[in-house]
Image (cartoon, rainbow, N blue to C red):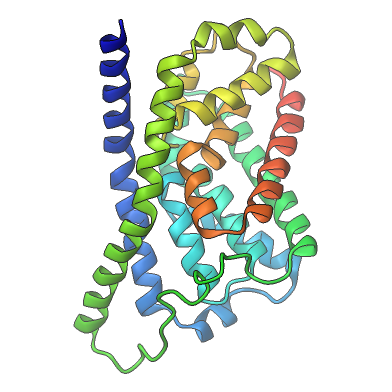
Length: 295
């Protein structure tokens, strides 16, 4: 029995890593491109000074980046180091894994070509991002990066370099970034695999009897399963007969913003107090939003 559990844990652990690593690679490569090709002056021109407009622009910038939650944390960190305000970077970090075209299309397909699920998922993600981003803009001063992170890889003077040397620099930064976040990914994947192996789904199903508890159970399940946002809709749709639409939307939004993998990545980059508040805001807004979803 123990050996069967170990085999299950091992196979889940490897499948999570295989699923996540390509997206982490995309994320760290984009991060490297930002480091080498985007200057602080360019970011200052793009991001509005007004906090509300900055959060708004960060929220909808997610449409342009086909990144899942596995690779979004290093991109957000790089943007902050380039001078993007914390609230705008966080707004981007929350919506990018959900409102990009790849994820919305996979959600549409997974739920049998139903537009309402796509609209509810995208709409709630945008609402969470806007509300949490604005609250953070008032609550936190500074970039909230752990001491040392603020100065890591923060070089100036790329303007005079040739395209090829910048490309080489991009790859070097991507490799550094991959090993920086990779350890958190591996630990997170192992924890997620262990939780999936030893926490029975039937136990969770038994708890979710009303709207509030079923949304909380599905949010907990999405955290435990730690699925990439490109594929989570296919798992969520398998619960359609058991859970309400509102709790499925909670699963699709919360899990893409907070799971075991990216929580550990965030804790490795941001101050713990900031991460705690961010997760509380996400959880409360997702829960409230899921209760408004009817279907």
